[in-house]
Length: 216
Image 1 (cartoon, rainbow, N blue to C red):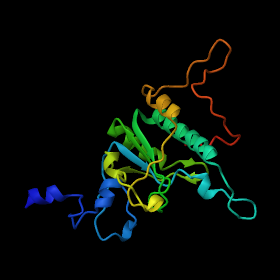
Image 2 (cartoon, one colour):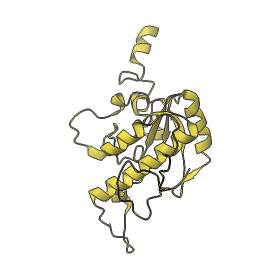
Image 3 (cartoon, helix red, strand yellow):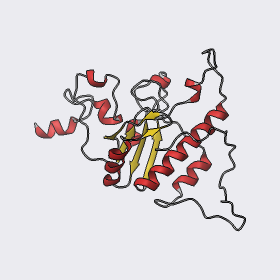
Image 4 (cartoon, rainbow, N blue to C red):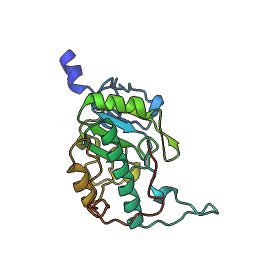
């Protein structure tokens, strides 16, 4: 019996533990879920709840009407956000193996930022410190997440639900930014200045005047 219960733990056959929370670290029913959400006491992964705000979903004019933001502007805004969060967390807390941002629209997933550190101790320290911080005018809500394999967390079929799917739909960063961030060693600082006094740039992205989204 014990072997059977262990084999179905966190699956759809498990009538006690929530399979969605086990796979994606979030559940659309929240505290009203009829199954248990077993929050980890240690994990390599943390989640920063609802941290990313897509300007296409939030941009409004002075009269409250929706303001059009182009796909190019959104990608630039997202890359700037991703780079800033990734760089600051890695410099403060330790090497990051993987970071992902949900592109879902459901309240339990929208803007969630999942950060998988190489060491569990780094993740624990990040959660303890980040819950006392603000970012871009909003309080940071961080917690340890059961997610370690994002392949199991993501929607892997031709999805008709789009942003309202209950599995993760991850927003990709640009290829150049991925190469830059994941090519870095742990806790690497800014590149050295050249003889002209300017830091060399690996990318040539135009930054808007308000590109600084906030500091932890």
